[in-house]
Image (cartoon, rainbow, N blue to C red; front, side, top):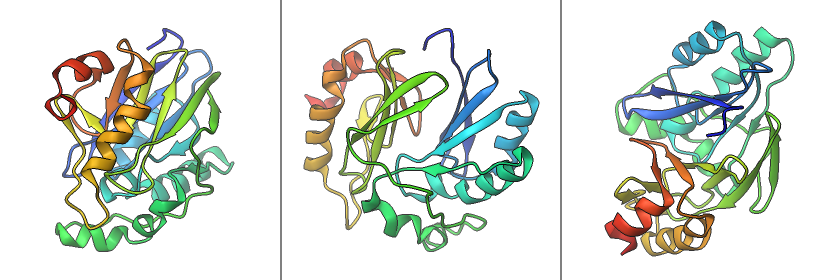
Length: 219
């Protein structure tokens, strides 16, 4: 992480999902990645640091990553008196984004809402935020429209539920595909370089190098 950026991980939902708040200490501008729920906790940090949120980014459409996005968008828009867009993932995850209450009900959870992004993203797109450029990379298999946001200058990536320390994302869903996920990790993540820090949706950060050599799913 470059010194020009700061990162706060806010665990949200019963799944302990890593909602990431990335901001510039110089400008107090921020982006929020995967606000799955517990919006009051996310807002408390934003207010404490007096941040202005430029956008909300979603890696994929699962409830623990997107279930708080609509409520957060509404609260931020009211606070900042300017629309705060929800951006991502790829359009293939639209059915998941529109069925979050049904997903939540399967786990006995309430208070999570469906969300309609202001726009979807596509593979190869560049997002500009906080004075940095983030590459959008499509890494399907956990969900069809899962994307990763990679900052080549700062050498880190928000990878959602694709790659973890010692593991990969679940694929035991009707739309999941383990072979597709591993192939996409090999094609889209491993070439980024061993020094790149990956920030997953659950658990601790790791590096591409550590996973290339130590992750049993990539052996």
